[in-house]
Image (cartoon, rainbow, N blue to C red):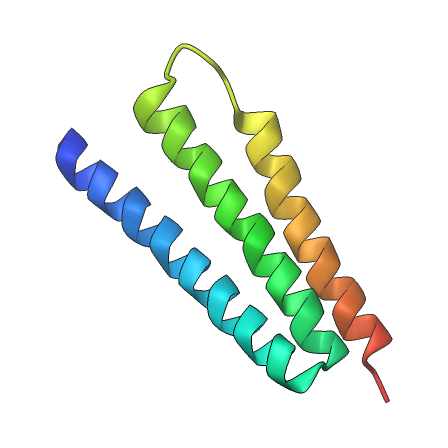
Length: 89
């Protein structure tokens, strides 16, 4: 795959996760449900993960951002898991 195609895929992933986080935030502001807050935080952290992927693979190939990428993804999934656990009724 060419560099332009890789860049396009990574940018689309970043924009998709950022859009999801924005839409979840908008709904949280309107409805004030706890699970929407946890979902918003999760997608914000996944957006950070996608941004770090873009930096790591396309822009800063000399630096290894893999541990930071994994921490952001793990934090997002943990936040969502905590939201699932706390929202069980």
